Amino acid sequence: MMIIDPKVQVLMRKEDLDPRLVAQRVFIVLDILFATSTIVTALAHGARSILPAVDAQAARALARGRDPESFLLAGEHLAEPIEGFAPPTPLALIERGVAGRDVIYSTTNGTVALNALVEAEHVYAAALLNGASTIRHVLAHHRHERIVVLCSGSIGHFNLEDWYGAGYLIDLIATACAESVDLSDAAHAARMGYGAMAPQAALLSGRVGRLFARRGLASEIEYASRCSVHDVVVRREGQALVRASVLR
Image (cartoon, rainbow, N blue to C red):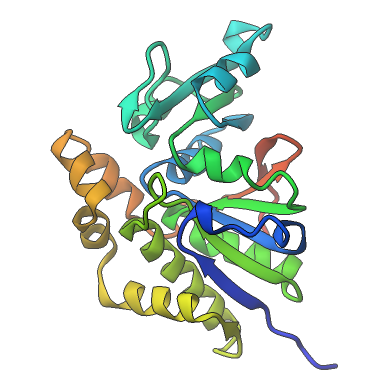
């Protein structure tokens, strides 16, 4: 039996999505600093689910009527904390206690990208933190489908950290497929970029990384630069992101 390896594409920004093709692809969404890194970390620390909201108003609407002890509101807008919300970064958020709770989460880019994929059947959230487990799961379940790594970008602009994260995932895919994989040019370019830089240096050298480092978040960036330290797969079920069963 002939094995058909995945055809893999990278989109550099959420704005590059073609709505006509969303239903026909498997998506892996990245927002390394910090949305998907935070989502992965919260679920790794026992959060029941993550409910991504497009903005603070939508997040508050999702919270309305819920038991206050059952959830956390967290997020940022244009890199600024939202009044009354828990911090949007991974280490700061888990200090608030996420175990057994839903996290209603709104960010400028990552949760917007996730909400742009409502027509997609298969959506995963990934970061450097859970790259290996995500790719192992995606190849086990979707090897014969078209896979898109979607970089959230930064309010319409390319950003270095998501591109680097895409390169890491592409490298994992290509290695797992013994290099027999049909990659788009953007996927090739991302993989080459990943091979040229160390993770922490890459995250700190981009515009967003420099901004957050100036704001005292270097420890959060260092944490987000760790590769495959969480054996967690994050998939969308309905409106929520949940922890999927991990394949070994």
